[in-house]
Length: 97
Image (tube, rainbow, N blue to C red):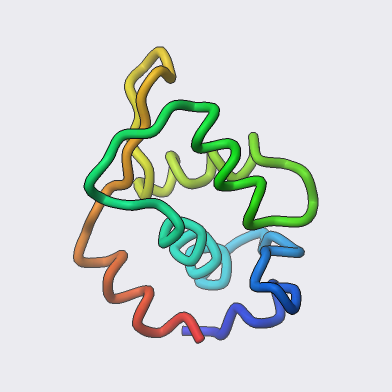
């Protein structure tokens, strides 16, 4: 798997979002690590966490991508979010850097 270092600033925030492929998946897995598996989040909390970990001011895009990738789950009305845990995510994170 490719390193995601080129997509992060000096503080570890996502400065550029890859358009596709393994790099995109790796950046999303990195962002998903910022959420705990053992709790639920409100949409406001999800937005705040995502905002803290990127520099290009588009938490809408990143939230949608996390959900579409199966890394975050949510109820239909958006009132509750949670981190999805999978074997694939664990394996992806071992090779991020």
